[in-house]
Image (cartoon, rainbow, N blue to C red):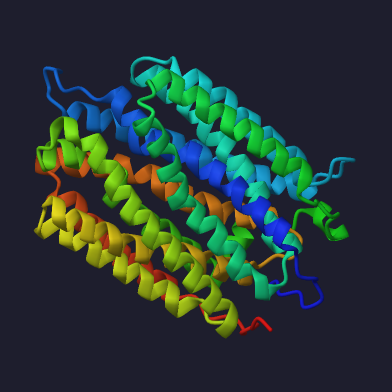
Length: 411
């Protein structure tokens, strides 16, 4: 456990810039996942039907996720070893930002699953690199009593990012290519400012040794259970969210109204994610309790998926969106705070938090791949949501296998 009692509390300005940086990251990652990629790869007139587009979307996102799971921890480990005049995290935050920005622009002009998949993989790599650098700043700079708040900012930014991105595209009626260019410009500007302005203090001298390696961290009992549960719960969440546009179009038969209704569902989801994120983050800092709220929130997410599996309607979709927002918002916030408390190697914060970040991102990107297979197997969406419920419960139980770290309460 990496609790460091002597760290000073960071300012509100630090927290605000950190939150905006995560808003940019989530916006450029999830807007394509929720809307742009399904639109590019949709096949309503294909000989094999619309399921072909679902499968192509799942494969593209899955391949990108696998690339990210390699790039994130690798970049984190290299930043732990970096000694430059620019700092440890800053060079990697800048590199990830610009890789993502350039590849987003390329994705907007790509056509077909192979070209779209190749460029999207570059986006996933860039996002994984910058995410690893920013997440490491929580453990580098924050005292334990501020980690829940920082985690709530990063988690709530995920839901807000979806609505900012999808809302901008839908309300302004942007074309796909223009949408990608706007997203690329957004991450380029915000990511660059955050990387240059956020402080990057020198690390522990022992960091140059690189600790004991990734396998040593994964063999740590508590860290291993936590990160495994985080991966599984995120796959469960992705089954319930990333193919939602296809569910509205073909599962509920909404056709052309699906895009507008997707935005409504995202707004509901976002409101409850934000409320749950800040509420659970504040409470976990005050009480020092991280594990049990994380487990309970995974079970709430499971209930939301069950409702969609057995009562598929537009009204129930809105109810499920609210419950899913509560469960996922609280899970990501208290789960990230728990992760920073359970880091097994003081000399390798970025490497190990890269694993934490990528476990969430990989879950969100593998979910559509698994979900596409479930939709194809069932010829519909009930198995997709049932699978989401089962994985949410399983991930919650895996998280329960980690011990609660010693409580460090906010003053």
